[in-house]
Image (cartoon, rainbow, N blue to C red; front, side, top):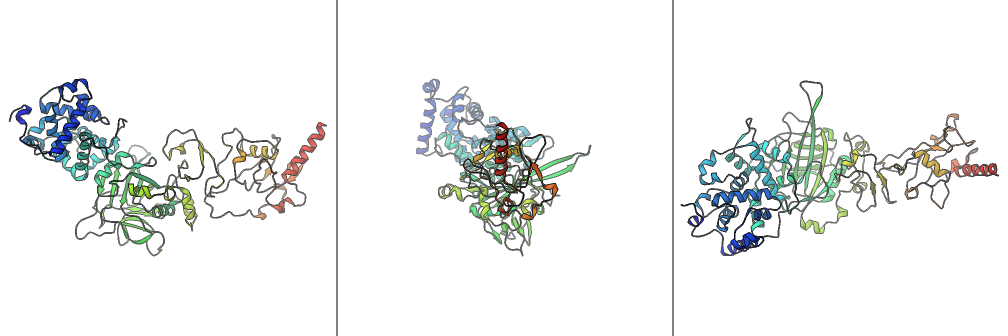
Length: 623
């Protein structure tokens, strides 16, 4: 076998006549794009950079690989390209040197620009690469998901999490053959994705890789991790999905476990559930603590039901995302059970919570209705054994919970956004029996009010420029302006926050007839306010108290809270008064007390009467 292309040309090709015709048409199409290649009918490095426009570095690597393999500098003949495409598309070759290579092996050699190892399969078994070389291969795999010319950086944290789960080499040297073997085992959908990727490039297919898009940015998940999950859990509903819809996050929903369970059930969607556990370790050299986080979760392919019976199917899986990326599939042996998923909020005789992989009330992952009682273990009878968190951790300290609904094209067409439970007001239809459960959750809400219903006209004014749904918690208090149909669980926010005056001063201005910007837009009622006096002010000042959110019902103000003791009577412009429950003033009506008994009390006047008396005395003095 000689070195020239003509001598290596096989008597037949693995492509059929129709495929070969299409390949020639595409090759000619790329040749016609440049003056140099239009005449000589070959491809240059620039041609491959345009073919792989989303990852031009891989295009240059492929050009260099073909250049060395074809022993022709600066241009690539179509025959040389077709030899390589046979392996990437057919997993076989009509050339003896390439017959023993599969798609993943050839793709990795192209990524490393290591064409010299193609000649001898035996040399590949002793081929050693560095840790950084392995990261390069994984990064090129993850870049398959990219589309168009919008350059994006790959999250190397995801690449390292995958590689660290495969190798723990102290000297940084990795056996290439073993790496490819593990990648094919762990990323079961990789061969199919490589084939589809190359088909899109050299058959000009309009259909692109289907990577689900998140409807908002996740704190725990990104597109690289989603793609890795698609490759690893390639039998789950993630395959073919077009969107991930946020159903619940403890960072934005304040309803606790009950709201999470309700949103999951009401959505009717397959789900991805993510948890982040925080563990504190004592430092060896000082008294400070080191915090380490573990991110893990599960994929359920079926819709959820509130029952204490097993749910799910044998394509569900559990996984660890960080610090190591591992997916645990259902067991296939005879002793395996099919207790994949569990959700119960009603049956008090059974554990109440969400679980995965359970047997006799013991769960692989258990999310208790009290988050602080959640647990995790390394083995069960339904899923493959392995660690999701460090082996010594049994009791979880959940910092973040996210639930994402998996949406397919058929579901997208039928789905009404109103029915998806990613909006907080859905929780208003769900009865809460224990309100202390909401208030006592040991989870700090960092919401920027993402959960506000999309159909409600909520205007958020904040200086934050980041679109991360949790990020505005780090900014100063956002100013919200509400429509009048907001439910009682929405937060009560100071409407005058950015107007330079204290709340008490602005309300007092309204009582004496001064106008305040945007005040008429507010529909709330100021409750439990008491007129007081400050010697350095010339107008009454109110002690402003806000209502508590998530109240089960509006409790009227008790009359016995107002006494006539001397300490509670205050002199305002020479008159002793106590007022309660002032409704908001509008342009065309006066302010009256909502409590008629107070208005008619002996020795007291309404705020309107006080203002009239004050204006009358003022006009007489001026006269």
